[in-house]
Length: 218
Image (cartoon, rainbow, N blue to C red; front, side):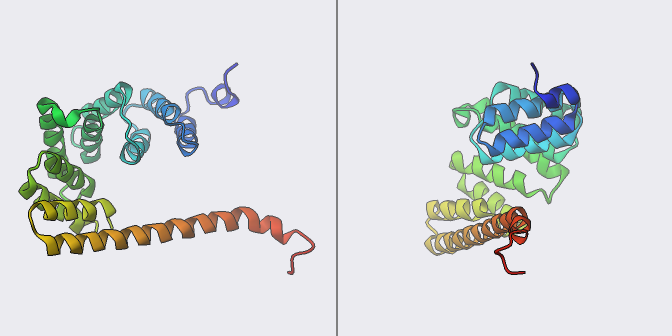
């Protein structure tokens, strides 16, 4: 028998996105992706399931054929959407051995450059294109693109880390050390934010229960 959620909300995008998020938090990435792709199939123009698919792509090294086809459709339906072009490029780049396929690399570059033209302030596209240039060992272009990514998001750990690597390849040791320091500081701040968020969740969940216990001072 189908789960209760499917029987009560058989064609609910919101429910499928919620299920996808729950599967992801449990580490069940395949189920998460299937739920989000199902949501996209119901409403191909709805940005929400595609945004969550993008979060999984950024965080995990996954990109199956269904994900690519789903994000390709989203980009074709919204060709003037910077995020749609970026997400499709990301799904292509996440394929195994994509950096060794000149056709795929060219397509990824074109999609990311289009994303940047559509929204010159869209940092993730600069960061990903900088990564592509680095993989190609095109360090001058990687430097320019990653510096822009860092300017748009000064707290980006990845931008600082990749800049450090590029500077090292270019023989600019002092700049490489500066960016590595910035990376470590950004990583430290990120860990502190995560710890505060986790503490807030614990207080929210446990504090009301503790307040009702007779042995807790009030």
